[in-house]
Image (tube, rainbow, N blue to C red; front, side, top):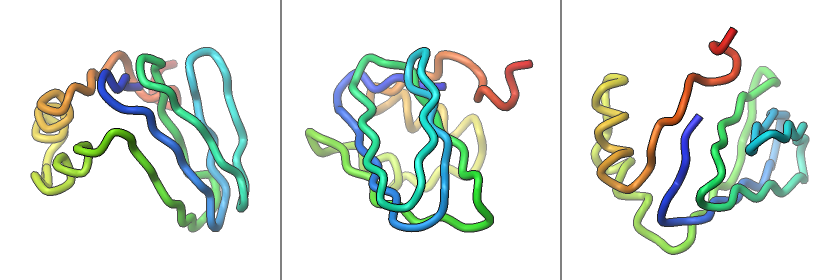
Length: 97
């Protein structure tokens, strides 16, 4: 679970299925769904199908810099996210039990 402090995030599911955890809500999203993840709300997602394709949008821009850093470990990913104002606030819900 993580929280964006700077940007809002949206996912358009082009193919497949995913489950999104947004605050205290769980949303099942299939092809054609559009999911909103507002800044300041903890969220994560899990791809449920064997394959999924989605379009991710962030506004305002800048979040894409995290991908340019190409983190290769969990620690590198946490540092890259933190650099761009994204805080890890707990384990992924599949790992929280």
